[in-house]
Image (tube, one colour):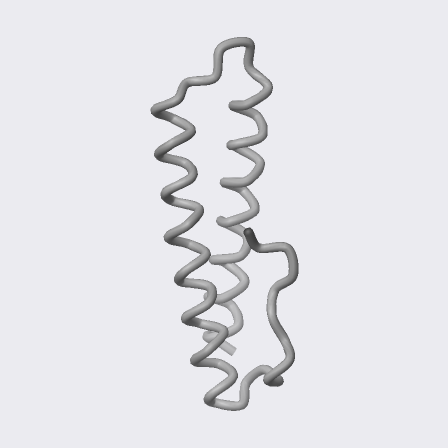
Length: 72
């Protein structure tokens, strides 16, 4: 189903950004601008994921109790 595919793509991007943030923080001198940009993208994706979850719950595509654990 296209809804779930798009949702999982958003979650995958969110996890990729988390990995990029962790990688940047491991550098001897992390770039504050890069971190700020990554964190903003991560928050935007989190909002999009939550919007998709609400929409899919309203449509009955996913159960009301289902949510992606670990999104922060």
